[in-house]
Image (cartoon, rainbow, N blue to C red):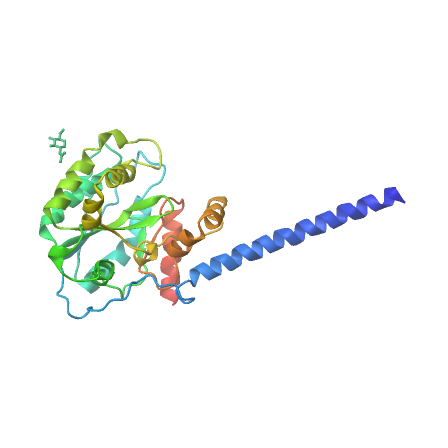
Length: 294
Ligand SMILES: *[C@@H]1O[C@H](CO)[C@@H](O)[C@H](O)[C@H]1NC(C)=O
């Protein structure tokens, strides 16, 4: 009798395993669907804007580069070619200058550092510069950069505005997509940032410029920080990350569900950023196809 029971138990165990695996797959699929429809489900990326129509137009440039990142494991060149038309169309529609700063890449450092001299050299010609890494797509071209800026600041008084507008992900501020305002403070801060040479790191996906910025932020006096650097309460305001199932994203979802909720790319978001993920070109193509079919 005892001997015959064994295969049955084994069969039951297998059945439980199959049911469990199916449940996990279903849950993961449900999470993807929910996050992709986060805005329809009531997520608000935009703070309420009160004086949208009263404000003057701003001189804005979108600056980026596509330089082959030999020091990094991930290439931006291909994804840049895929998103070039998307960025051009958006800038033309809104009347922004679109600047490719490839000529300003300083090859003595990982290319990501060169956003600093690129911004420094153009800042005096604009009110605001919108830095956007090449691995980004404008997913809601009806949203203007002015409305993003004003919604974070809460007013349209240029002189009373902060100098940096950033978003935060699970690792803190992300310097792949952000706004910088024309001011003396911004210029000096860029110079100091550029001088953080101890953070320069070759041969990994982290080039050190982001860590250097965080270090400077952490060491600013609280008053100065409050006055000059503003962080959007919602990451999805202008720097959403696509959510897809992986051990990393599952871990992040369970350790900090609110971070995932605030930053996961959903229909209606302004911009998607393929930060820290492989297959950027495929991702960009997929999102652009989705946009066309809608
Ligand atoms: C950055 O470093 C250079 C060279 O060491 C120095 O001349 C300059 O004053 C520094 N700039 C700032 C803002 O600290």
